[in-house]
Amino acid sequence: MDSSKSFKRVISHGPCVSCYLGSTGTELDCAVCFASTHLPALTRPWIERCLWHTWPPTPMLAEMLENGYHCVPVGSKIISSGNLLEWRLSFSQAEQKLVSTMNHTQFLVYGLLKIFLKEIVNDGVEEPLLCSYFLKTTVFWMIQEGSVEWRPNNLLNCFWKCFKYLIGCVYRGVFPNFFIPQNNMFINKVTGSPGEALYEQLDQYYRMSVSCLLLSPTLISILEPAFSSLTFAIPSVEGHITAVAEIDSVIYREILYLTLGIQNPRCHFILLMTIERLTQLSHSPYQTLALQHYTAEVLAHTAFMMANNTSYNTHRNLYTLDRIVCNMLKLASRIGPVSHSLYLALYYYRTGRYNEALRVTYLTKQRLSQPYILYDGDHVDSQRYSEAVGSLSLSRKMKTAWTVDVKLIPEVHYIDELILEQEVGKQSDQNVLYISPFVLTDMLLVLSHYRLGNRSSIYSH
Image (tube, rainbow, N blue to C red; front, side, top):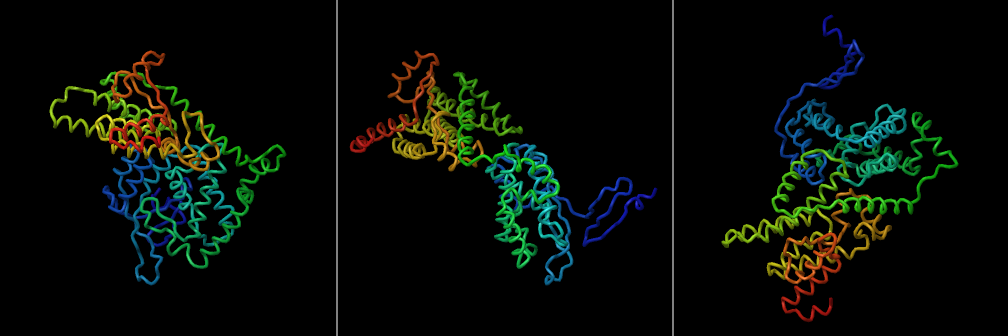
């Protein structure tokens, strides 16, 4: 059979062609385009954003960068421009990679949004303003933002947060492209009176809350039995608050139970190389959290082991060592729990930089004084915690609100004032010294002020 006859119902719209494959009836959209393996400078903020939020995973991001993008002709929507065609940057291959990273809950939410759009929002509308591409972009933004907990038992809440993001964009008339946010995809589409009418329609669904999904013929048979059941109850806000704090406490305690008992510097460097390789792989949020916590711990202990090395006998070598140690401790304080900043304060105090030690300690004390701090996986104000960090990712929760006792291993000298305490710590079963971060902050403040001769400041602590 002639291949040209295998395409049926060929329809031309602008520079593209829609048709159906005769043998299977599969619908196809065809467009001529130019491919490029070099991403434009406009995408640099997107790359930086992906690295900052660690989504998509680094290996996946590298593949997306290698695949490049396409330049596709589209019909001009600006009548006054006099141009029949315009050119659009297409990242369809990158989008396919992003979709492949979605977990089951994220897929379900995307499906819910598509059913909601097709059977409720666009039902009976000849020329709808919203399309499924907006929904996919919404899910991308919400995943990367990290404010949604993508769990099966949180499905409706995930849908609702995505819907709120979408209706907010319609209200502002601005829908940023995921790859180039300065590109407003609502321009010349969701504007003027049609945009206002769309917002009023979505606002009616917003007032109905998640029960608006019952307007869908597909979803009503699934959701109505649950809503009409006498035993069905939507969890209260108080229950959600308690659940967030309790779940995070359990997760944190699980991480703290798994300690690293390696005191050999060589082993620590092997661990750092292993961690570097592990960061190139895809991980679940829990694996990412554990890896982040142990990276901070290994960095802190390795830095002090290097500082204890007496083989650096020249000023140049000592300066290089000091810079490396400081950078390692700064990185540990950025990615680890709040209390990990005190390792940097200890090093500043040990090296006679008392003003720097005071600066870091005061900042740490301020962060530790927040009412939402989760200490040692046990002590937390559940309501304040949920309000402050309940919507953040586990990784950001740890950096923002989690703290733990500072661990001082016996083979490392930290500061002279703790030598006696470390000797006593060696007699314990764990052979290490644990100091509460709340105690250590006050101790460093008093010692630093004393060294600087600020005797009047000592009595305030």
